[in-house]
Image 1: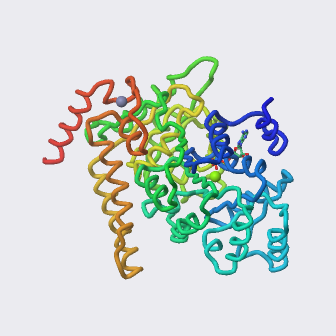
Image 2: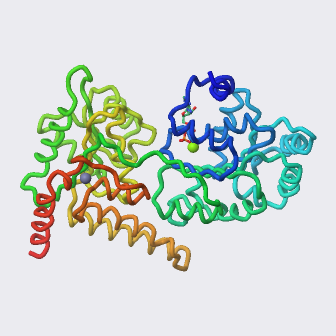
Length: 441
Ligand code: ADP
Ligand code: MG
Ligand code: ZN
């Protein structure tokens, strides 16, 4: 066993790295000669990319994380592993804070990981400590977690993250590691720029997933949309058969009413389907989810509140009855299909009316925000541009996989017929033309 694997086992109890990518990142961070930029999906094990190097370094790793709750979770988890980690934050009792600072001022501090929010990093009270660590060469790494928070294009924008650029310039010589879940290209560029990463090594999980088949169906052209959805479900559930057992699927709808209607229609057509939305009693919602998890119900018809933290391997299809609010959300939601690597389908039912409705809702929200604030901001437009990318995905003639990869700044994948356009470009064009005729009527 290599010494790195040994350390992984001793400190974290893991027998192996989650992925080759995780291992490569850890090695690059330990090498320490370049800044590192990591894009990996949620749950891929990004924290370990700085936690393991932190354990193997002499000094202290400073971890920036946006929320005290997230920080407390991580610190708690590390302490259970007997790893000296703590956080300095506004909620900390003065006594504990004093103890931490005393350790940090000592000749050889015991602490390995110090978690901190961006506002605390910038606060005057923390500066002497930071300067002290820095001038004594005790900072091993600067890790910026949830780095997308630095971007005004992201939906979790936190102005305090912008101060990290300045911090970065003060910590010259300390390797910086920025981590984010898969993010659109413009958000990635913001991160590099704002954190002033210099020619960072870039590690990213490939965006393209070859087992997912994407297609777009213009709903307004269908004589019977529910029968169409029903046929899609039957076909998708038959993609994998035999020993692998029964698959299941998700239909996403925008409103509670449409969840109810679609679930009802599918049930009438003979598929076991249940609605899931915030209008249900908590008990019914939990039951719908667990029935689906256990395979008692094959299809869950849900608003987007469904799916966070749901990790089910055999999801054979994800259908969007209404348009997702952005291409980034669409990628995440549709990406719940095929986690087991087996063939799975992702379909969007596009409709012109649906698009108009979404545009109306988004604009209303932008205006509401501006009125509340009393002024307009460039970032207000983010929601609009995000949705435009989703619409373009549906309306354009081109490979769906390529569109997604490009959006996330990844290279053009070899789709090999895993989308409707690559399988039959003429059919895609014909659909667009028929819809155009319909909308001028
Ligand atoms: P991310 O930040 O990318 O969303 P986390 O760092 O929170 O992911 O890790 C997700 C889960 O994966 C955690 O429960 C973590 O303990 C686990 N994990 C990370 N690395 C490994 C590994 N090498 N082997 C097994 N589990 C791992
Ligand atoms: Mg994380
Ligand atoms: Zn394609």
